[in-house]
Length: 265
Image (cartoon, rainbow, N blue to C red; front, side, top):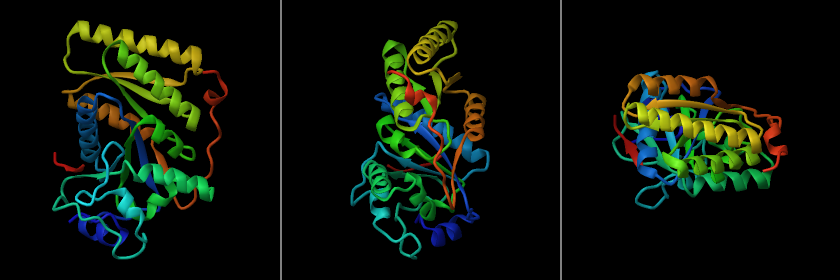
């Protein structure tokens, strides 16, 4: 049984509860299979670096059979019963359905004038790292008080450039944050590298012209563990934190410009 509460989760996983929780944001896109596989590999790299990881998956809906963030938010965080029964997966990556719960967080924050992610700390402080995986339209409103650099994994081809640009624009308009865009290659051939480099250049030009730039790019192989570890380290360097108090981040100049369950490894 995996418990997401402070009391039971800390005891089960032998994690040391922290006053701050590091947070990463990964934007989902239409090509779910390739994006999710890269996400699992990235989380595995983070775990190998010593970070107990929990993923709030905004592409998976909560149900009575598969409870998630929506159910967790209805419980008092400091009570012993605030937990999720997700099966015997204590040694696995915790992936919690959150398609309903993440938008709920944004609505609660707007109604109470509080930082959107602050409410998550009591539930997940036994973990070392919280990964938010959701569409940009969901992520943007949640990141308004968090200094992090969201990750956008660019799908291949011209459609991938358009999809990634739309993601950059939504996050910029909502949260004013620059993103890291990663072209994830399935092979290691010269033509594939050339196409990816060209797509990233095109995306960079669009961001420079319409969003004021402020994006980072990288290319990595989906089957290269060193590439994934390098990306994991880059994201950790730019991770945000959820702490006892959160102050609003200054609005970035981008906004002022025109425009499951669990996974074992």
